[in-house]
Length: 205
Image 1 (cartoon, one colour):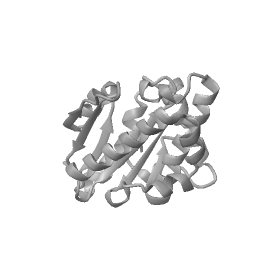
Image 2 (cartoon, helix red, strand yellow; image 1 turned 180 degrees about the vertical axis):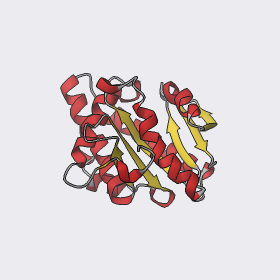
Image 3 (cartoon, rainbow, N blue to C red; image 1 turned 180 degrees about the horizontal axis):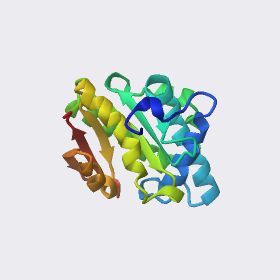
Image 4 (cartoon, rainbow, N blue to C red; image 1 turned 90 degrees about the horizontal axis):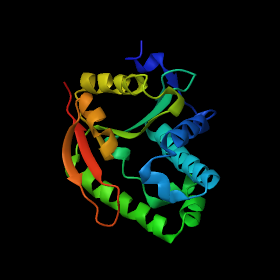
């Protein structure tokens, strides 16, 4: 059932905001987003807006789905020719208030990460592939195998179409993605940040 994109919950314009709420809850305690704000309510607000941006963009150019209407988690994938998001698109999708309010240091960190990620993506995956842009499991449902349920539909599609899959990961998720067949291409240690990046690729089977 879960291996077919037609049998899972697909977000559309009327409910895409729900995807942002799920991801914001999932990432709230993550180190890579802790600098957004020390104020819990502000951090959740900024996180929700940021996640909504990723899912709105993915809905327009790719696919966003959950295992069911219970929204145990959410995943967003993009085709290879839509992964380079221009700055004006971030603004159009509502990121300007977040970029302004998080402060100069956080803003510069986000811009440095965005530039680095785009350059490395082009270096390692300048060919047709699927890009895992965002994936998150609601904290209430974590540890129950929902990540596997979220990954499987697109991995099946990728294998059918003979397409590799690419992603960037923090250290905490590297072994998880290796379980799904992803291989580490490069570990980037960032002297200006505590958050290193692992670039990973899964080749079609």
